[in-house]
Length: 365
Ligand SMILES: *Cc1c(COP(=O)(O)O)cnc(C)c1O
Image (cartoon, rainbow, N blue to C red; front, side, top):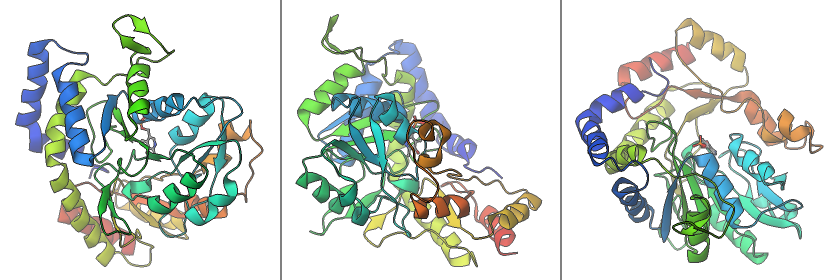
């Protein structure tokens, strides 16, 4: 059994994907070009964001966003301690100090109730993470940030395709819920390519233009450079693959709902994912919590069932963070507990019911 069945996914879309790759090969337009502008249009219309800018990875998307905001040494940037390293890596790479806000016990997303106290004069951005594919209470986070005029960057690496009902009953898509959002097209993410890729979304035209320049050597016109930038463009080949996959995304997101429901209804004695009733999750992962995780791991190993721990160490306790900032165990107790109890089960739109039954039997057994 595959943890995330990318082979079955490729087989399913093979003729379309092979044709899209061949188009790029025949055009020899490997950098920028039509495939890239097509995926940017598709990302824009899917999310409703004013600008969608394709780039080289979810990590670079975060770095570019912070660069566009001129984040520098002495600034503070708030994020969740329960995330992949990239969220804090981008902040520290620019010399800013990561300030953590603990997560909600049920959704594992940054808790808006705990956010206000973490804001200081030096806070220059807030990066909530839409963990496992579920958006945080973004309306409350945006409102708190707006009071101090702080931009919010949704780290939507795991949540492309997710949406949330707002208090006016309108739905907002992940990546279009705050002034900036970033996503990743790493193969195992909800919208994955066949290598590295990412995108940045913004509703601020000035920020979008700057990011567009920054990811292409700070160039504003051919060989005219206004910023120190990066080479962080999305490959045309990856864009071509994404142009195929995005057409099937909503079908896959629907499948993810029913597959998750089947686990929810059949798994026993574990905490299944809590999805807020305002949210449709993109289910980047199906992650459960168990007190005796080692015992569960034994059972999974005995039945040859793949699993993953997302994540074993909260960001504030990562060596690379701790050696610079004096965070310690006990600082963010909810994140620390979840890191001890979380475990992700095999999950993808292509998992079969037979495979799910095997997983359920091993977990319940
Ligand atoms: C995957 C991920 C990233 C980084 O994306 P890459 O494309 O692998 O660079 C950033 N943040 C979160 C929360 C992620 O899960």
